[in-house]
Amino acid sequence: MRPEPNGILGAALALPALILPDFLLLIVALPLWDGFRPKPQAQSAMQGANAAVVGILGAALYSPVFTSAIGNLRALTLALACSWP
Image 1 (cartoon, helix red, strand yellow):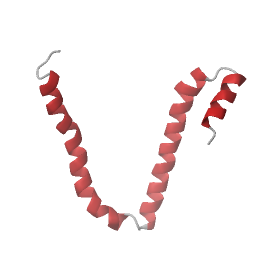
Image 2 (spheres, rainbow, N blue to C red):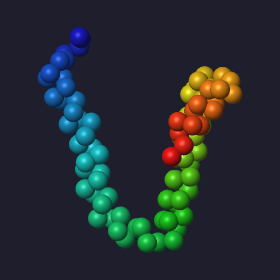
Image 3 (cartoon, helix red, strand yellow):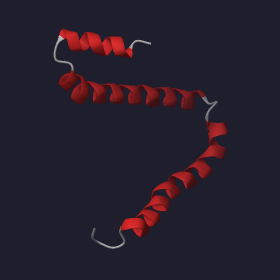
């Protein structure tokens, strides 16, 4: 429990330090977002960013999770059956 501050005081200091920058960015970016969103270049950039995020999440799911959890056809069948809508 070193260095100081720790415990409740450290948590009370860390919480605003973690949340405040995001909150300030949101306050600054939100008014600009309405002007940015309808532009075709911005839409293309957002679609590319969305595709990149989906790819990264898929890779993160495959590499540590899928390769270690799915070892045979029975496990694959169970995983697919549990994920079916």
